[in-house]
Length: 359
Image 1 (cartoon, rainbow, N blue to C red):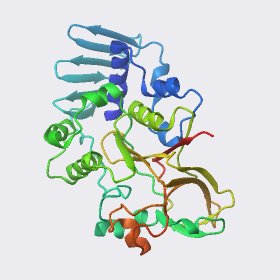
Image 2 (cartoon, rainbow, N blue to C red):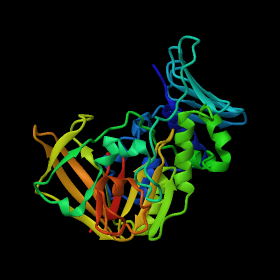
Image 3 (cartoon, rainbow, N blue to C red):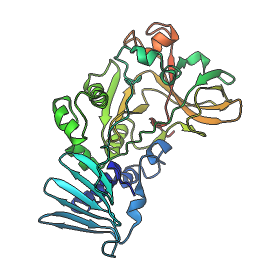
Image 4 (cartoon, rainbow, N blue to C red):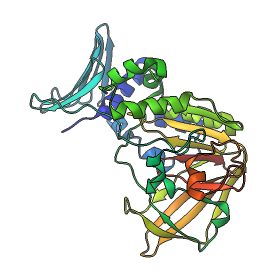
């Protein structure tokens, strides 16, 4: 059996809950938003089934924390948190060791696995301050996201490519996130934490994610990078209140490549004005969302279908005032228009989220 960084964070979550009485991320959602269902984009990166094991024991003592998830000695999972490291034993020779800032996994043999890293990718197309790179402009996945709002009506046909990332970093508890460095002046600590070479492409991606989070917002935008589910809930409910609906794009069949889709008749406006918070999943070793509330925005539910019957329940966000965006933003270059002339829309990938008032 192979254990990932997720396994360690799940166990650390249990340790923190026991030690500090904090709610796990999914229970925090339910406590704040008891009548708001989680969208698929969130449930996909939550793993709550571990909470159902009633035989889990947590002991907090002088030398650290010991967690056992079975009453039978040696058959369950045990975690020992001591000086500067975490050791996880999952029975039958499987061990996960977290120490010295990295993660290594072995499964009964003395061999080191490649540490957990981020997937290599390009700049986010949802950061409106930045000029597009040549790579972005020629990336079908990015360019097909953007279109004009006057094309948003039943019968419109569009070439789209909904890609489900193979890199699915999960949420970590707020206590762990708050204790993990996430700033440009702590880059060396961050790279050490995740075994990332400072000059590698992974390091470049992580550095860019942090930079996008730290950069100033554009005029009319309130932004926040949520490093945990709890902090995302807090930011979004602060801006919209707790009577909200949270939605994400759902694709019936994964990674089918560039397809011609037809907009079906059930297009529905979800919200408009400044009553929308959009949270974009960032490329990072654990789940981080770039959340922002912008003025002059509209959100829609847009059902799509290919000629051979594959369906997508898409979420679309349209911006009616783009005058403050970078003139070299990818949307302007692809659509051959200038800032502030006409409303621009974009589809949301599956792992992005929109918050709107429930009414």
